[in-house]
Image 1: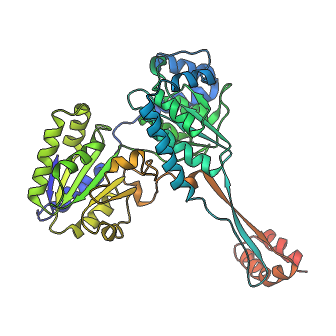
Image 2: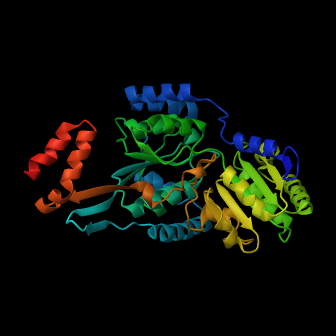
Image 3: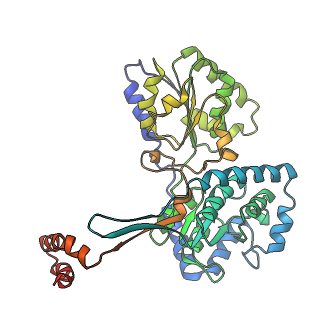
Length: 426
């Protein structure tokens, strides 16, 4: 774990190293993924079956899960989990319905009719991790915005190592209304969604988190289909003063560290004594944390505590780090939040831990990582919609603007462009 002080002579060097660490790939799996995609593209179901047998030790007669299997497995979901999923779905749905955009239609001063229509994508593929990293909440975060946007067909893939699946995943699928589900994982699932097989009809866009192979596969099929993002390890940055309980902050930092050995947790504070208390609390919690091994690796390799003179100094540092999650555990958190330009999602005040946003807050928890919050946003209804513009001129309107179009067409050396307008002006 790094301890940085803004007053240190080499602070800029240390901080820049911390920033640049998030942009470097840790594993290169591009060659393997390229071969898998090419094989699935060429051989379809046969290739998918071979990879599923090899990687998941599972070889079903059909990859598509039957309605009876889904219902039977979902029924095994504990009642309290089922109820929590339903509450989460209700809140996620309510928030994302607020995002539905409005069409545009108007006539300008020369009589040209202009507009923009929003239309939903026809079909979307959702990748849901299985095995150890099995997250029913991510299924809700992907499927519900797609449903709200108006996507007609949602195809879901989820690996089933050894033929096993978390019942909560299928319970979440039922809550979200997803019925087309395939027991496929890894790069082969992404390839099947992008190019199709004898069993799986291809989709227009692929969303959802996965491991390094899934992320690289999404990168390689982009262009053939759309994708949401290339997800990296989880990140949290907590800005906190000494009015906080250091143990609370320690739990917040570890809530992301336990995701992945490459996850990153950073604390920025203006109190050196609070920093030391928080570090001590992290070490204490780690001793008994069930996810100790992963969380310890993350904290020791990527964790950082930054001590500033004043918390206003945290803003330029935060914007440069562009973290996935930001907690502002300070007085007047909303005022400080107005200065933030690069973050996936912001959690305001001591009583809003990031973990509440992972499950039942309402906003989406699929967020930009690896500093992509500089230019990207979290998943939303907009990711499942397209904008189509339209334009209508009558003879009078074309007379008003056509001559300028002809001039510009000739200036660009495109006489047929000019001609197509000019013929209508005569």
